[in-house]
Image 1 (spheres, rainbow, N blue to C red):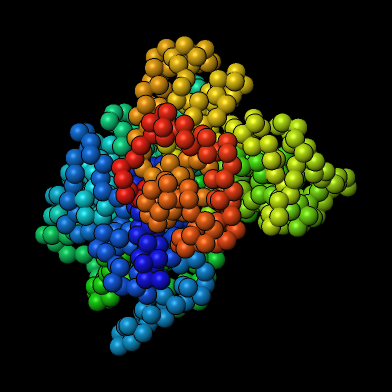
Image 2 (cartoon, one colour):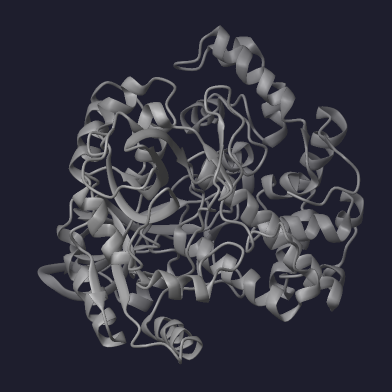
Amino acid sequence: MIDSIKDKITNLQILLRHYQYQYHMLDQPEVSDSEYDLLINELRVLEKEYPKFLMTDSPTQCIGSSPMSRNTLKKVYHEVPMLSLDNVIDKNSYLAFHKRIEDELYDSDQIRFCCELKFDGLAVSLLYEDRRLVRASTRGDGNNGENITNNIRMIKSIPSYLNGHNIPKHLEVRGEAFMFLSHFKKINYEALSSGHKVFSNPRNAAAGSLRQIDPCITLKRQLSFICYGLGLVEGGTMPTSHIKCLKKFRDWGLPVSEHTRLCYTRDEVLEFYDQMKINRPFLDYDIDGVVIKVDDLLLQKKLGCITHAPRWAVAFKFPAQEKITTVRDIDFQVGRTGVLTPVAKLEPVSISGVIVSSATLYNTSSISRLGIRIGDRVTIRRAGDVIPQIVSIIGSNAQRYEVIIPIFCPACGSVLKREKGETGVRCTNGLTCSAQLKGALKHFVSRRALNIHGIGEKIITQLVEKKYVKNLADLFNLTITQLSEMEHMGPKAAQYLVDQLEKAKKTTFSRFLYALGISNIGQTTAVNLAAHFKTLDALMNANIDDLILVNGIGRVVAGRIRHFLDEENNRQVIRILIKDIGITWMPMVGLY
């Protein structure tokens, strides 16, 4: 029992460190904020219950990810650490935070809270010496960030020189660099028109812009900045009220949000939260909640901080945004595991600055569960502000049509079957089905699997249609001549892909297991399997009872793992990948 808990904590830490690196350092988040928050909260609960497994380098004790090693961006040490914020996601969890503050400050006068917007951008530190901006840096891991002074000077709303009275000799101001939604749409439109890559969201656009080598690129991106806090102060004094510090910043020429309010009761805080939730769709920038801080700086100091976050502040997150639209049609797609997935084609609607025109229904049972028909008016939500999903049906047009679920696979024509215990139907034609093979290959080369650069969905489609690739192992036998025949693939690109395939032969046990695409085996489960069995032979010979001993695996998932490993075609492909292709990993490595 204790060993399985320790394994679960270790595996969560590994996965969360990976997500932190992708978000903070590469500006390429792999999961939504809400999914990350659920994982980090799960880890906090486990570490609290089993404190002997709590390590100082746990993601719960760290703020972000260490600064990337770059020749162009030097490290900056934060004398006052730049902490992140703990989150609450509903009224009850906020009230628990409020009560804790009142209980700990019972002997203080009436407690005041400063409420602000939680901008979705990049945390930045500005250092002014003798009124002049001398340095700017990112948050980094909270203790060390990256020097982005030259790029910060390209943000017009940040003054190079402060004007006013009683400005400390050394003043560090902290805030958020962000991009207006209207400008985000403009630069994405221009990128699309010129054939360049578009940004996935304004936050990534802002973060990427501040890490440019050429400050002129940052200037063209037209970023903005809002102050939200105070860092180092020397050679002068500041007010002991947070909101009065913000007013000082404004007096000196620094940008401060107009949506800031001093609240005296929890009801006033909740009123501010509700009002900002209503105003959110009408703002020209992304916010994902409000930040609530004890206003008195002396009380802040009394409450103190934990390793990664202050105890005197919290981020009260908004629920995912919702919009109403119409279902135009229902398409059916076959995934890499053969499951038939219905996809609702929608009248396009903008949610959080993103145009949504389709939403997955996950499986065919969802159609009957929701009672959905073509022509229905539906409520759409971006789950975690990322994944579009249909929440409910609110009415219908005069004409609505029943959804006909196929009985044959739309990709290969095979009969669809509903397996025992499953909620949807599945094509059982395996990798002979072109849709499943394409999906399996796309998963196999993906970043979290074998991470093979230079091969995308279009190349995979051509390789399958030309029958150059009939299984996963065939990828490694591709020649430069074959690859050069692909559209938009010249000899240099073909050679690069061959080199990447060679590089991918050395991996980790857990990545290899994840890359195989076994049903219900995600990153965490792959890590758990690798850590438990240590070797491929041990896993291949494991029975159902052996498998359910692995953390997070029940009898149903164990059955699917065993079914996959018992299929002779799958066993043959695994043998070829190991013995003929030469995929290897270091022995006893079960970490991702």
